[in-house]
Length: 145
Image 1 (cartoon, one colour):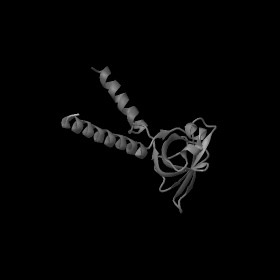
Image 2: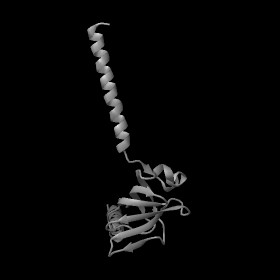
Image 3: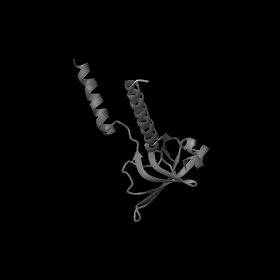
């Protein structure tokens, strides 16, 4: 084998190894998004692994301790099965029962210890009455033209 071919083969091998290690490291650092149903099927698979769960806050499950700044609630997908969530931190303003949330953290036995809590909200930022007035004014302006 010529020196040029050896150099090309060696360089390709090194680049291949670097790419393989990069992909492996990237997969370890990636946080996947799951549903409560997926977590409840095999909870041991997610033990001490950082994950994100998207679900709804179960009605009647919210307990807010303002003195300790602790929030406890259940997340559910179908209303029947749920995962209890424990979160230390301030409660988001838009947080309420029946609201969509994304929690990031780790499963610990049969509960989820959240390190981050994100509340889903609609894209509509206007007050409903103000929005309806704008619609009415728009339709009135079209009728006069």
